Image 1 (cartoon, rainbow, N blue to C red):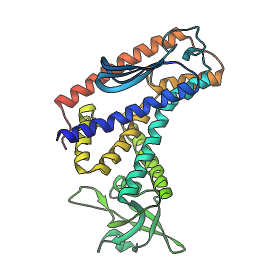
Image 2: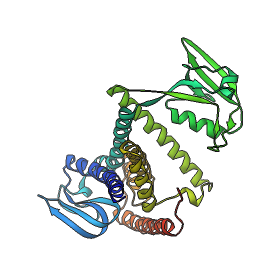
Image 3: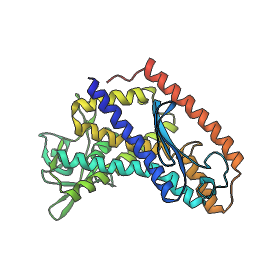
Image 4: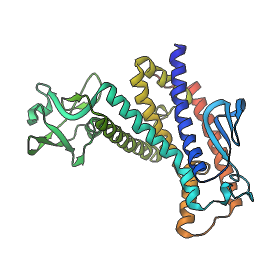
Length: 337
């Protein structure tokens, strides 16, 4: 059990390290002095002093940071973050989320190569199912559902489940022909999800196909995450839909027990969540800085540093309170698996 927990913590730590390494390496490429590279927050546990950067491990495993010269205070040093152009600053703050997207593509690609890629081609059709009654056959390749282009099997499942009991339009390729079918999904009593009764083909991909699969899976998961944020902002999300660090470790531990590929798949998914959360245009997040620097590039006007500092301080306090609330929710109202 302890081994699985350690694997789960290691997997989550890789995402944080990857994110911060993105900031770190692009800061270096832009000749910005990095003073600290930290994994975790709070009191210092361990540190190694490099040529100009101190590498730290801190007590609270709830994130990490890269501290750059001139990030918080003005400096006359030409290598200070504050003395770089808005475009260079934008490249540095964007690098963390971009790195998480690249990690997701890589990990999805590895899992696809290791256990095979689930395709949008149909392996079999269940007897007396909506798909069979409509005329869909084995070897058909699904192209669109309700006129939405399909790239992955996850998109097929999501569209069918979200469609519910309404009529569904499925467009397939059969040989050289493109055929459309109308059908009404039925509720699966075991899974409590709607289905049309088809099973996908799984194939062993080449290296190139694995990368393509990793990219497509990342696009699909990104779309679904933004849909979730849509329901969140509309007030339709439930408390049981949320989890914090304890929930992440629990889920990751379960994935580790299921095998290394399951853990890698979950880690890729979490990497996307981390990227998207960080690009939200909120003060103290990467997204807040991205919004600010884009504004400066477009308007060619410098925003007052003191005002930015105040807004970011308020945003940071809010984020810390939010983290505490999520942690308390994890403890007193855990998600049951």
